[in-house]
Amino acid sequence: MLTEYFKLVKWYLGCNSKSKKFLHEKCYEKAKELFNLNTALIQTARDKAVEILKSFEEKKKRRKHSEA
Image (spheres, rainbow, N blue to C red):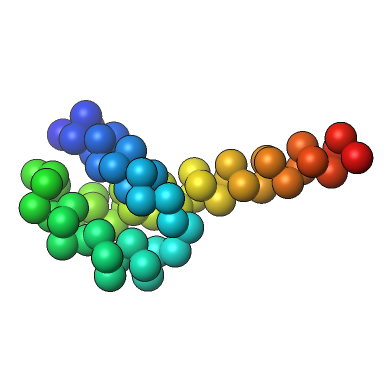
């Protein structure tokens, strides 16, 4: 089940959105079809992907400021 969860996080990362609302509206039903996980795990995978993308963005901003 953990492997399936990580595949789903990676799948959500491929949507390249930091909006939980957007991901829910546009990707949730497809995620339910593609991945054999319960609703809670699908939602936490979505949230984890959003956190990862936001973290990458923040680190990129910090790097630009430190280089200036």
